[in-house]
Image (spheres, rainbow, N blue to C red):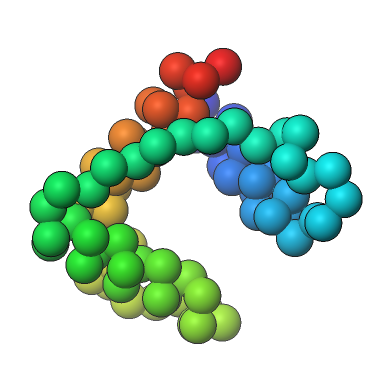
Length: 81
């Protein structure tokens, strides 16, 4: 299961870099974040992923908030199929 999810994430990352015909492969998934601290954690994780060549912030990779958010996204993705 974890390998399948990693493959889906890798494919999504690759598709995000393509300009041709990507819209046909995208599904709309709405994610509502109501808690300010969840939003801050997500922001920190996205900044880590975007700006660090070798992300190593232990607070990001061990965050239960980020783990729960990731689980929610994966669950919503599977419901869309």
